[in-house]
Amino acid sequence: QSALTQPPSASGSPGQSVTISCTGTSSDVGGYNYVSWYQQHPGKAPKLIIYDVSKRPSGVPDRFSGSKSGNTASLTVSGLQAEDEAHYYCSSYAGSSVVFGGGTKLTVL
Amino acid sequence: QLQLQESGPGLVKPSETLSLTCTVSGDSISSTSHYWGWIRHPPGKGLEWIGSIYYSGSTYYNPSLKSRVTISVDTSKNQFSLKLNSVTAADTAVYYCARLWSKYFQHWGQGTLVTVSS
Picture 1 (cartoon, rainbow over the protein chains, first blue to last red):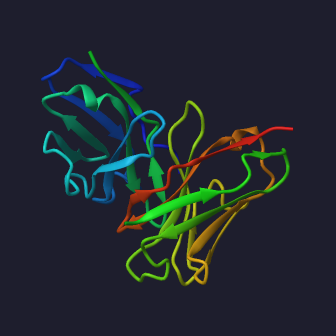
Picture 2: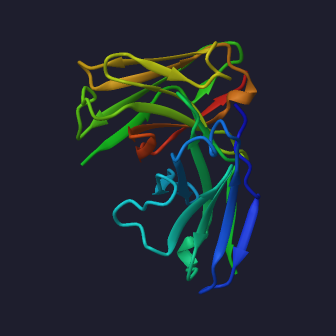
């Protein structure tokens, strides 16, 4: 299995929206609606922020939203805030295994 | 409150076996609702799933690591463990244990850095 493909970096100003893409194959992202996104701040463990492509766990602001089209999933962060600056990783179920993306560093300008 | 804590040597020599244990508190590892897993984060790279285990001992491994990995569970100690043999510098990473909910890593330990070096 190969890692999912994410852009290494993304940026936006406070209040703006940013979208991060995550491209896989029909064996992972395109084959299942089990896509998730994790937020990781420096020195901290990752935190689940999106699951089942577009659902948010309790406590995650609705500024975070997810979607999927074909083999590509996307995470959109609306109304950017300073605390959103972090690394973001997508992940997908791939039939008895799990694959992650390489991560995207989101910078709030 | 659920807590997971990784423990084990922070330095392992090349060709030797990396051994880590995850101690779970605040939940029973025998819960029929959850799998438990290991994930690692090499420096400067993305996250990598290593494998997952059910309390019964049923396991799933990353195909790229399967030949070197063993994950086991000790229900009497409420722990699960990771063994990775024949390590090289490429196995240097922060290793996390986590509790799964459905297909997702819902709760994570704080992580432990393991360096492979002579």
